[in-house]
Length: 133
Image 1 (cartoon, rainbow, N blue to C red):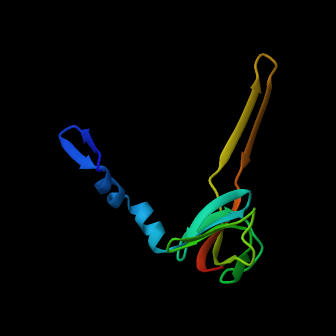
Image 2: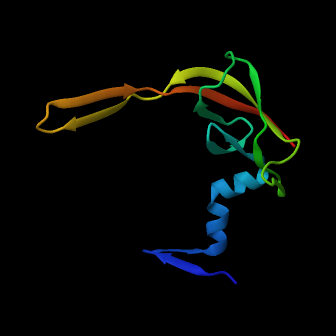
């Protein structure tokens, strides 16, 4: 039942490919959640650090993210319709920072009109402390 793929001189079976996929095996072994915040969705597990748009709070404070779309705990998966009821992800605010400088430059040729604007997004670095179902 194993299919073989050949890439150059290396031959691997489909079973070996699935066991070598670290992301897939790590996600099955730990508790993970998909959380919606700042207009984006994040796949999180405990101990992961990630950046979102600036949120209110002091450094070291614990914040609860309640827009949980999916929770999986060692194969037991709960999918929300659209949110998982009673679920929350507790995160700790690590630091407030700013993103890279983005330059917007516009020019209308032969008219002498130019616009140059810069922008830096305010960000918050968060660390997941616990996932509660």
